[in-house]
Amino acid sequence: MKDPIIDDREKSKKYGFEEVGGYRLIDEDNIFVENTKEESYPAIYAVVVENRVRYIGSTIQRGRERRLALTPGKHEIVKGVLIRKISEELKSHKKARLFYLTSLPKYNFKGLCFVILRDLEIALINDFKTLIEDGGWNKREY
Image 1 (cartoon, rainbow, N blue to C red):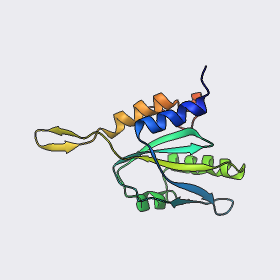
Image 2 (image 1 turned 90 degrees about the horizontal axis):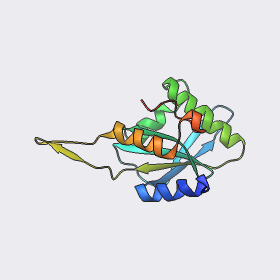
Image 3 (image 1 turned 60 degrees about the vertical axis):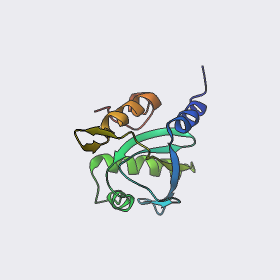
Image 4 (image 1 turned 135 degrees about the horizontal axis):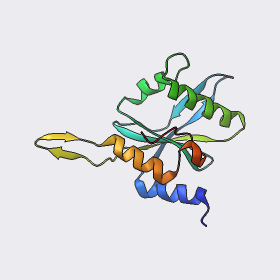
């Protein structure tokens, strides 16, 4: 059986994920997202810890707005769990990085241009095996 870490790196490249930044622990309860590249949206993003994809999500928000949503006290419960998971890894001195997939397939229906974000996100969650029962952080496929 192949090493899952190598598989994740190969899959990430195959799908076109690009590293846009990393996470840094500010204090016991806060993390900061350091972007090295401008993000675009809509996008699928992946949280990668020590070369393993641990979480896949999607966003239609600009990166700055999404980072504000990751601030404790101003987030949904799922993002709160994500903050805690990333913090735990950073406290263990592991490297956590943020990757974006922005070259998404666009569709046209009678003049309406759109991206099927949720279906692609679910397919990637399944392919990278990021559900909790597989050792990842995604709660469900939706």
